[in-house]
Length: 554
Image (tube, rainbow, N blue to C red; front, side, top):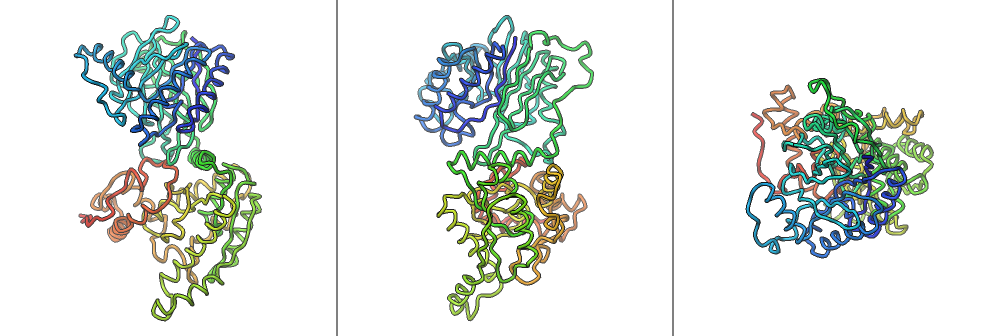
C-alpha cells in the first residue's frame, strides 16, 4: 500500500477553506500514486478547540465538513473530527461490543462539551470508526488492500507506546495534534518522536505518525510525519513546521526484525534551531490567522526586542515589520545606534519618537498629586507606559498588530511594567528564558553568516535604561544564576528545599520563589505567546493570584 501523510495547517473553524485545501492535498496524493491519504487529528476543524466544543453549531459544522470532504475526496482517506451525537453513540456501541460490555444508555443526553473525537474513513461517504479521547489506547480497525489497519490518537509529544496488544495489525495510523516541546525542555529527548520506533517494534506493525502543523493562539504544532517499519527502522519523515506530503510504501515492510532486541532507529534529532522555527511559525500564524499583515515593535537596542524583530521578519517579511525607537531621558546613544543598526540589517522601516517631551508634561501634571514630584519606581514606569501609548497609537492608526518583547525570566520575576512593557497582542518570547534567547540569537547569526543582530546587542549588560546607569542585575540576580533556578522550579517542579538540596544558594532560592509568588497577578495581564516549554507560566504553571502560601525552603 502506498500511503500519503498530509502535514496540514488548518485555520480553526474555517471549515470551507480547510475542506477545500484538504481535497487539494488528496488530489496531489493521488497523482503521487497513493491509495490512502491520512490527515492529522482535527485537520478539518483546527485545534485546540477549547470552549468551542460546547457549541452545538460548531460540532455540527465540524461533522458536516467531514461529509463534504468525503464527497469530494478522490481517494480513500482517514480523518478525525469531534463526534456528533449519533456518531458518538454508534462508535461507543462498537467499542463496548468489542469489550464485551452492554450498550450504553441515552447518548442524546451527552453534553457537547464532553463529546469525544471520532475517526472517519472517507471513501465516497464518511464512516465513524471509533472514539478517541475516551480511551487514548483504543484503536479502530479496518481492512484496506489486504492489510489490517489500526487507527489511534496521539495528543502529546513523547507519549509512551500504546499498551493495547495489536493482534493481526499490519499498519498502525497515529493521528496527532501534539504541541511542540522545546528542544531544551527537560521532558524532551534528543530525538523527534522516538516513541514511533518503539511502538512499531513492540507491536510488530508498521507505524505512520502524522501530526498537525501550524500555530493556533499559544499552541504551535510541529507536524512532521514519521513512517517506521515493524522493526523500528525509519522509512520516511516530513519536514518540521511545514505543510507537505510524505509518501511511503508500507506493504513490504510490515515484517518484524529478526533481532527485535537490536537498537532502535528513531527519527532524526531535533535541529538546534528548532525552537526558533517554532517561534517563527507561531508568530506568522497568529498574525495572519488573526487577519493582520503587519506588526509594530518597540526597538530598544536590547536582546529581546532585537530577537522579536528578527522573528517577525522571518515570519512575515521585512516590508511587514515596523520598528519604533523611543529614546527617553536615560537612553544611551549606544542603544539607539544598536536599534538603528538592527533595523538597517533587517531592512525594516523605523521611526524615532522621543518620549522626553511627553514625559516632562506628564511629570509636571502629576507632580503635585505625587507629593511634589514623580520619582522612584513611578518615574521609571511612567516612561514605559508612555512608550506603550506611542506603540498603540501607531497600531490603531495603521492597523498594525503590536508584538510584545518580554521573556519568561522577566515574567517569572515580575520584572516588567503593567500597562507598559506588558502590552501587546502576542509575545513571541514569553515562554523563553533570557539565557536561551542569547543562544537562539547566536544561532540565527550563524545561519545568516553575519551579525544580523548586532554583536554589541549580545555583549552589553541587559538594561531597561529607566534611570542613569541602570542594569537588570541591579534588582535581579544575573540571568546566568537566575535561569537555572527558574528552570528547576518551574519546569521540573522542585520546591525550595529541593532546590537548596541540589546546591542552589538558599538566599537566591528565597529571592526567586518570593518574586514568583507575588508576581502572579502581573503575569495574568501579559499577552499570550507560543508555549513551547511544556510548562508555560500563564497556563500549565498558573497559580492562584491571591495566595498566601510561602515555600518554607526546608
